[in-house]
Image 1: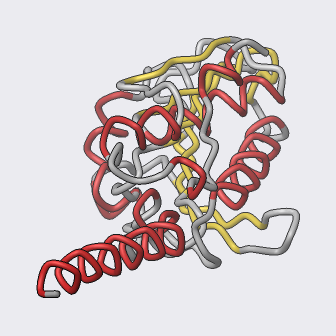
Image 2: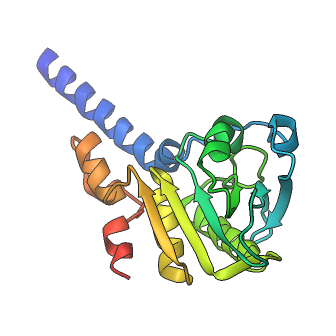
Amino acid sequence: MPYLRIGLGIVLVYAALVLLLWLFQERIAFPAPRSRVPGPRDVGLPRGETIELKTASGTRLVGWYLPPARPAGERFPALLWFYGNGETIASIWPVLRDFQPPGAALLVVDYPGYGASGGWATEAAVYEAADAAYDALHHRPGVDPSRIYVYGRSLGSAVATRTAARHDVAGLILESPFTSARAMARRHYGFFPRFILRLSLDNLATIKQ
């Protein structure tokens, strides 16, 4: 009888963990740290500006637009930046400053629920934010729409890859990308059933497009 109770307890604990993973998997994938977005000029980028965008569903996004330091002509290339799942503009601004090519503009927005952006972080929401960011950069005065490059790091690789598949881009840059949410779940949560996974984040499938 004690063994039966122990076995039943293990089953109940496992079932509870499965339920929690099913309910909170987007919180695991998108921890959505909140932070105030510093102004570019506050951190030594006098030509930059804080911008606000709205997604198609009305979510307010906050980001940075950094014009080129040394534009090569009236129209210049641009870099659209998508960061990792635990980052915000406030945490990576030194990287943005050092990484931006001097002859190109750079646009980065905090995902929904991140930084000072409104809304909630979900897979659909970050994709919608990416569409809004691309559209804003595409219509930005001075930006050559035929020379928009997309960069994605870690989780941002899925956002960048989808953006490159859906929009005209000149190039795609991926840093520490992954194959898919399913493959990552199998690697890190292989003890749990696969059917509970709702996220796709499928770089392998998307990059074929």
